[in-house]
Amino acid sequence: MITLMNDTKLLLSLKILNKNAQNVKSEDPEIDVLLNLDSINFNVDSDMLKHLIDIQYCFDFKQEKEFHEYLENEKQLIMKNSDGLFKVYYRDPFDISSEWNQYIMVCSGFYLYFFKNPTDLEATKNVFIKKASIKQDKENYDFPYVLKIKNKYEEVVIAM
Picture 1 (cartoon, rainbow, N blue to C red):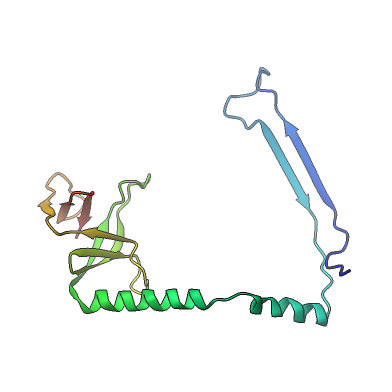
Picture 2 (picture 1 turned 30 degrees about the horizontal axis):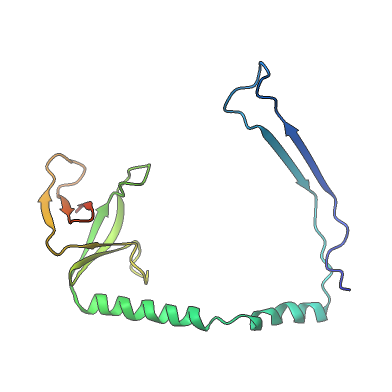
């Protein structure tokens, strides 16, 4: 038997609130848990360290490498076939903050690809633009040029 961890002191406080009490608000949590852990001590000798390091050989990361290579090749194809590269701002309609976020937009084939960083291998968002309607949004004055792109799947608003 291997002992990896020594005795550890753990202090747990559990408080259950009665929702029917007078001074308890409805938004207060029903259960309040406080956990205090002073320290954890591990015993690791050289043999144990060797075994811990050897754990990495138990896992096959080949699929991750292949997927990474696939993403690299996919981005190279997108960039090779691109018609334009633009710095744009995009506001995600599902984001609560409704802030404009900067993206690198690549127009390639029938898609617009949005990359958060130029080094990202996978686009954060892509929009199908074949048979899409593109109109300037004159009601939005945050940026000089705001475009609404509407296809049969979604409506996207970008700003330049």
